[in-house]
Image (cartoon, rainbow, N blue to C red; front, side, top):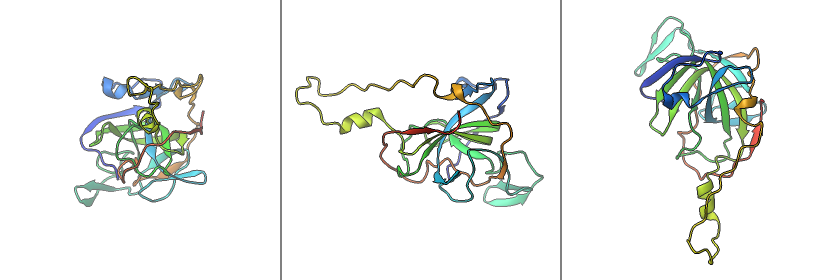
Length: 224
């Protein structure tokens, strides 16, 4: 399971009020068509029909859900579980809530058969420092926006596989990055009104299980 270290932010998203965050965190915020501020994040998961299953196992979750703590009245302190009053989800002293990362372009990716999810996080959100490059989020609510079934596409890595024309004088090719289609992305996002509540205590962002070679992305829109 991907675990964060130091807690660096504890805030509420999914309202019309922009969360007051440092610039390095605020850049991951976006708004829905209704003007609600959400966190734009990424994770890996297995597909199981209409559900997504964490790579660490456990029950799956639908495209939109609000988390509840499976272990109500229990707090994790070090290696021990100790009694504690019921807490809001997510809680810094528990593993409850939906986990995701701030960037999809990370090393150490698991095998490419695991779909990459682009998600919008809302409700209470915690931000933790992570040993990788980026931020580990844990959130009360998660909305799956896009499913990439072919992994992460790195344009530079793709060019290295292309056979170079011997007549190329500079010995390297230029990387041309694709332009996002008009009316695509978070500007079309609208959160469903009433998501189901699920006990979520062992979710995982999915980037901590192995390594693979990035592959070309082929995204499928789930919610717009």
